[in-house]
Image (cartoon, rainbow, N blue to C red):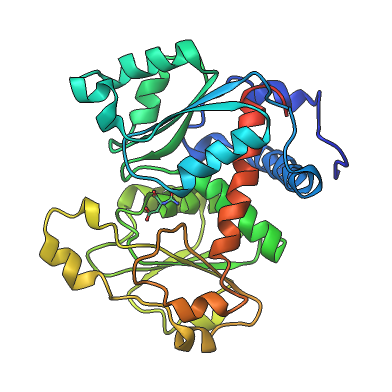
Length: 321
Ligand code: NCD
């Protein structure tokens, strides 16, 4: 059923109210449909009126222990477009973290001021840990090389808004599949759909075994490759990732693989006309700037979809969707 107005009062609202968002594994297909329906409605509302007062009087604490441009500013934009306010701790260096304050104490502080906490942290499992110390909803904005669930939700929303049905698509993920947390979450999320997954990476940066084991368990078909040549023509979604320099122990390893996969206009000559190129950004060298002018380059549109998804998620966990 398509809703024509913001879906107040649905039974599902109470299921999300106060919920932490830690991993994509917590969502079933009905949840996803609901999130995307609300996100789509948010998109329409922003187009029509720009901002509205759904979360007036509510405060978000944005707590970032790692650099961020898009995730932090899109959560801020999402909260402000819904009439709420934001406490931004984007440089923990300047907060009491530099005095040795623990993560549990920092979230116990912020929950006294804010209604919802968004956390990015270098340690896998940091959001799950922090959630044990706060009664307010906490949202994982990236936990080291673990997951980035809100990115995967916006990635899936992008695919749906751009290509329609997800079932039947071939999704090719290319680049740093070992340390890229966005592809970990996206692969998990897509395993619930009838998709064909292709993982293309340098040999030292494959998709981790635990993600592959999850795909095996769900029966999702995938292939691991070290070249795009045999798969580009059949690809519907080319999901490109940055080689995550900050996760390497040895800089020489980074230098060896950093330019192994570079998408340029030549790469796209072999691709379908109806396909999209996605990237969570920031991009370094892995997509040349000429590709930006190709209508199939969806990565700038993808950022905007992220704001609508984050608006939906904030409204839902605060019981206002
Ligand atoms: C990604 C991240 O932080 O994992 N960026 C983002 O949130 N859009 C990808 C990256 O840093 O390469």
